[in-house]
Length: 274
Image (cartoon, rainbow, N blue to C red; front, side):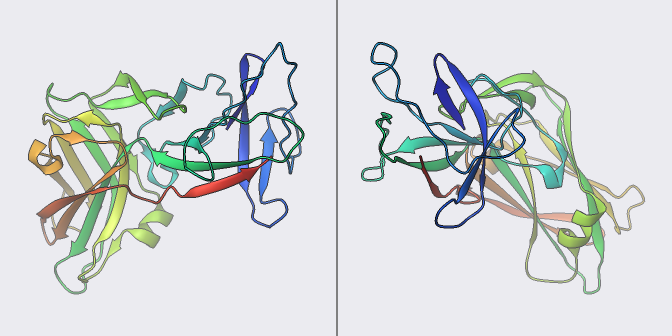
């Protein structure tokens, strides 16, 4: 979250702790203890009179000081994956943007969060009873020049816009032992176990290949690949969309289909009082 101070923005880490009186804690960099309230000083008339707009984003990034240019990286440890989210400031009555004018009265800001990245949801189930297969990593590989694969970029917390700054031939998502044990062990079941990975939105013309690295398959290399077609994703990965791929595991992997849903983990609506 940023608050306007003169002509600069302050990057404030906000933590929800619950409770009726002080549900939020505000952590300012450079201070050892968090604050239970956030106060906005009424500016001099000649300095600023049109009010303040509160902007929120997640996850918080230490050292970010430009609201329209927050750095991010794609890939890495799967349990640390977090979608980039941004929130417009809404009127409690109509859900439209409005300004806060500090005048000595308590203010309430309603923030509705939106997703900026695209979710690839990989669903797996085992075909044979008693199978025990674990997933150690997923590699998203670009095998052609048809569609760029973003590895780093910047995020605009004002409107959720993604700007890709670095491109790569492959991005790896690693799964630690704890995650494998808790979430990605497969036994015979009709239910799919889903593994999420996040990528940048892009017009998709083809060329992305998923490589799954397993333990427990009969294949000695324990690697299986699937190439995503433009038809799988309606020729684009959109912000906030979930692309749900389903696979059945035997001694090989069988593709069962893909579905697309708008929105994944609910962003929710939060109120912050000043």
